[in-house]
Amino acid sequence: MNPSRRKLLQCFGSAGLGLLAAGAPFRQIHDKEVSPMEQAPRRITLFLCGDVMTGRGIDQILPKPSAPHLYEPYVRNAKIYIKLAERLNGPIAQPADFSYIWGEALAELDRTGPDVRIVNLETAITTSDDYWPDKGINYRMHPANSPCLTAARIDCCVLANNHVIDWGYKGLAETLEVLQQASLKTAGAGRNSREAEAPAVMNLAGKGRVLVFGFGCDSSGIPTEWAAADDKPGVNRLPDLSSETCHRLRNRLRRIKQARDIVVASIHWGGNWGYAIPDQQRRFAHALIDEAGVDIVHGHSSHHPKAAEVYRGKLILYGCGDFINDYEGIEGYESYRGDLVLMYFATMNPADGTLSGLEMIPLHMRRFRLDRPSEKDFRWMRERLERESGKFGGAVEALDDRRLVLRWR
Image (cartoon, rainbow, N blue to C red):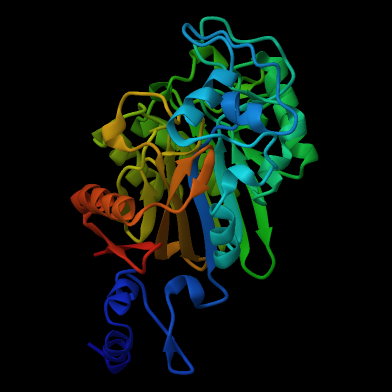
């Protein structure tokens, strides 16, 4: 152990061990060791999370709710989801301001100051009443409530998912228009296949670019007919996870990627519950890195966080879990703790796209707001992530009483 690392352990004890767990080099500034996220100003930090579902009950507590009628088999009024949450955790003041739902996440975003903020937006933003028949669940947020996204200064909304066309193609068109007017980039859906396949491009002064490509899979419940075409709006739906599909993506992505670009492949895949990672998902993620030049695989669809893997220095998040939803008080699958969510902060080296460090911040959804978890819940999340990521050579340790870090070999 070099002297600076020994000094870190002597000065900070277990916190020092947590810093070492970040799996990346440290530097010393005025005799103070800092984590990868706090060092090297030329590095790029990305905030990523899973599904942001601001429809139904969430939409109803915001200043301008949509009409509450639903077409679900058992729930016909979106306000019922508010009642379920209040029955479990107490009253929710209404109308809530646009920043309310983010809760403590805003403080973490301010603390970290990520260069780019990426979410999977799993909600149509529309006044359309043209709900998709036989869909079962239809998520909608009123356009006047879109400031709830800008309240967290989101940069990119991935739309390649199984709810973005819940209110028809008119609803998709309005969603794209509202997000564009709010200066929010989109990826994974468009007015035709060219738009749906195009990346969201974030230019970072002096640091290069971040390119986000959105992809959706049938395993996440995206209807076949939602696939975009040359003359048809829709989502960028992958036909499968075969080597042939990866080969086609390789040609497209490598034509676009430039030096010092960070490429994110944001994929909506798999079912809602369970920790198992299908072999085809892992092979496809590895192939995207090996062949297509992808630097981060940002997986979502699962309602709870799944394993993270570092493969050849590149980050794979197999399932980020839900981040904001109205499931509070709904019974079933409690063992997965879907009420516990994660913020992911990935620090990258833009020169080669390798991962320098990954911090993860657990939060707890309560009264439709993200709060600090209890010590017990924090420990539960660490242990579960340690168990799952350990299957792929990773280790998860506590940096302090609110932050987790991933260590890898």
